[in-house]
Amino acid sequence: MAEVEIYTTAWCPYCERAKALLSRKGVSFTEHDAPHGSPERRDAIQRSGGRTTVPQIFINGESIGGSDDLAALDRAGKLDGLLAA
Image (cartoon, rainbow, N blue to C red; front, side, top):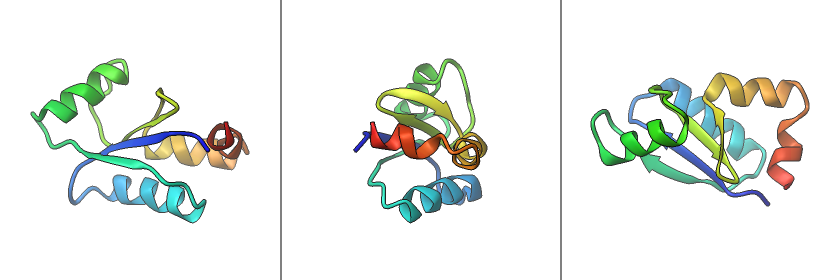
């Protein structure tokens, strides 16, 4: 199973949507609370190549983007392969 990390903030509907999709797929993930201005948020921005929004999702250390990107991978049939790697 792939290592999945997700940087989130409280009260973020996109974060909740991404976590729900991963949970429905039975994927365990590490969640990093990354409020604005925090070291975790700076880490997410750096790791994602400058993306400042949340969630930021990483699969096996590679940035795949946010909630919409995660859902697009799932619709395209590509997410399960990434999660199985």
